[in-house]
Amino acid sequence: MTVAVDLPTRLAGVLARARARTTLLTDAVDDADLVKQHSPLMSPLVWDLAHIGNQEDFWLVRAVGGRRPVRGDIDDLYDAFRHPRQDRPALPLLGPAQARSYLAEVRAQVLDILHGTPLSRDSAPLTAGGFVFAMVAQHEQQHDETMLATHQLRRGPAVLSAPPPPVPDSGRVGPAISGEVVIPAGEFRMGTSTDPWALDNERPEHGVTVPAFAIDRAPVTNQQYLGFIDDDGYGRAELWSERGWAHRQAAGLTAPQFWERDSDGSWWRRRFGIRTPLRLHQPVLHVCWFEAEAYARWAGRRLPSEAEWEKAARWDPASGRVSRYPWGEAEPDRTHANLGQRHLEPADVGAYPAGVSATGVHQLIGDVWEWTASTFAPYPGFVAFPYDEYSAVFHGGDYRVLRGGSFGTDQVACRGTFRNWDHPIRRQIFAGFRLARDLSA
Ligand code: AVJ
Ligand code: FE
Image (cartoon, rainbow, N blue to C red; front, side, top):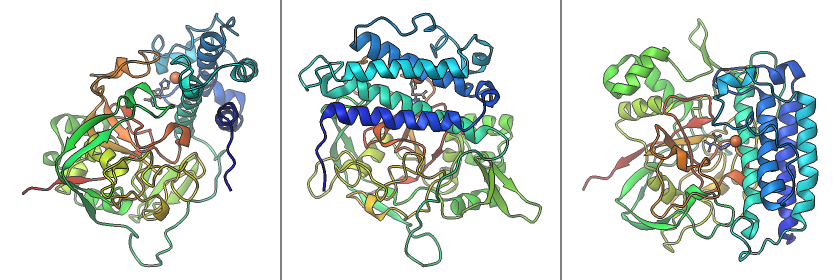
């Protein structure tokens, strides 16, 4: 039975779920750990914490509520563009206790504001359909995923735990899913103009004509990736682009991040403070775009463009229409996809038959972010909204688009149109990839 909930109640639920996760991630470690920088790539957790509150203070208390700032004096400290991550530990940041009470004070005001704000589809653009409340929840969940990546980088005993992901019920040896599907040539509708919670870079909906191509039914697995390593993929310059090879050399890459090889040749993976044998049929995780590019060349394939990825994920060959998720319009539940930090690792390929797309592709949503061939660029007709610093300032930069979300992505920040991006050298994010190829006539 589905119970229809009104929009303010739904938004309050989405905000509460984000806060529960923020609390879990920041209560899991002691204060010394919260203020410490675990990697120059990451902020101290206590920066993310107060930054979450500061964004909510700015957009919901001030912009929507028209109220005085809860704290107007700290905006500069939590402006991501003023202070690069490696400089943040030296700032006079709020301490853990101060940050927690800041978030609580902001949230108390926000719940009051939420219930007094008109949210209809024809209300002011910021609040129409609940947009800005959902934007703030997505922002918090994005930082929660970033904090989860910080947890993965931190050394020391495990502090997070979760049940293992489901396994495919095939009972046969080898991966439960393999091979590719053919997506015929033709136009599909990319992006959205109607999804009320879609962020600016997902808009507007527009027609894209995609030539016929083939795409794998599953992401590249650890076992497949081992084939590349064992074939000296990291030692053969001809498999890498010029930039990729230069990076491979400078960074000394020899395997995905967090992989370790024992003297007996067995492969292990460190994950959230635990060392486990590499699971062969899990999607490969913690590879950078350059590694994905080299693997693809080794395999005689290529990465999909983001248009190809989205067509495989949302387009229904029977109706010619697009859906919000690969499986249709239903909100993701635990049978569709590995999302929301419900598990602390990707699931084996084939573990989510209920999440398959109309085109027959598995695990497009959840498990691992998937690197695409595309650089991050605006769609035709893009309008920055409500602030340039979410997307617009990154357009034209050295970024590659990732699609589909990971096990660490909450469903509020994940859908078939959702676009993520990062530098092609980054691998602390929860990213893997899947392969595609041209269909030559
Ligand atoms: C869209 C995930 C690249 O984490 O840098 C958080 C999201 N923007 N605060 C990021 C974001 C502002 C952003 N990504
Ligand atoms: Fe942010």
